[in-house]
Image (cartoon, rainbow, N blue to C red; front, side, top):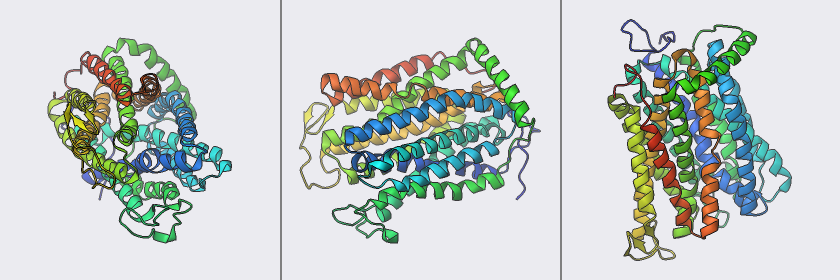
Length: 469
């Protein structure tokens, strides 16, 4: 199959040649390749395993993991705009994706060393986690920057939404693979499907949890190959040394110019705030359920799979709506759904829904058998369904607002705003929870993040011809 040459994106040009369907589908596979890192390592399997079994205590484990995440976030926040500017000046994206993808593979593969109760592996393990996190985030910056050259502007929303949905599906399948076939309960020696772990993985030493690191690296290598082989890259423009100098000059100019680009500056600020809220909502959703309903690994893992399915469906539908009504409308609608779901969750307790008493969960009861558990599950799916299009439409709106010759640079700034204050949401949730001794009060603070995001988003103006809505 012939792959067309990447072209600069702008308003739709009848004479422009964009990438073939095969090339676009291959680009989408990057999201499939990268998502297991977030699903397996940072959310549902390895991070809880580290806090519970590797560190001395869960509190210490959570603290250490948080410090490592924060350190990686600082590196990402500081370097993303610089690297994006250099990539814009040099032209090519794939060499950067390959280099940072290698960091992801190396860092995640090294997580196999994380044996339970071994204090000597904690520091190397956290360094490996930091390396992998930096790698996956930077690779994503440059992959996002390829989008405008692949499809016409009126199809960017669908492309972004399809990418996010595909990523969610990849995450779901990787989680099912681990929970169903690799990670076993040490007490029973059986996986979620009641099977003995494949490859003779030892439940006693949590090899099923630890294998998520190498599995993530292998998964990325296999599924990112179509993008490298079949998706066109921008042609090389300048040697690296020249690109470095010119890129830094352009970045300084962009930062000086940013206050004049009021809509872009406002959107980046809004993205910073509502991304903090979304990250906190996902981070504390399982913790809140565990505290409220007493959920454990099976319930939380199943809950995560259902949320990911909802996220995939939401991102796919949101991508279609994005092209019809514009990304700004999709972002606003997603935040309204999230706000409504949070408020409703605050009125769900183990024995009441909207202040109406219901039967509480009972020990040994069926999966999500209690009415309040069902309500929380429905609200969680609403959150998952809104979170997908919120993130997909955000990168679409960035593309519509950014100058096309500096797209990677602005994706660097986009990554910065998504990371530079990422500690604020979790910190406020933890602080309010500690002061009030109430999980509900801690979760309630997230309402402010989405309200502020909505207010700021209302001030963003998309330039004529850049949006269909």
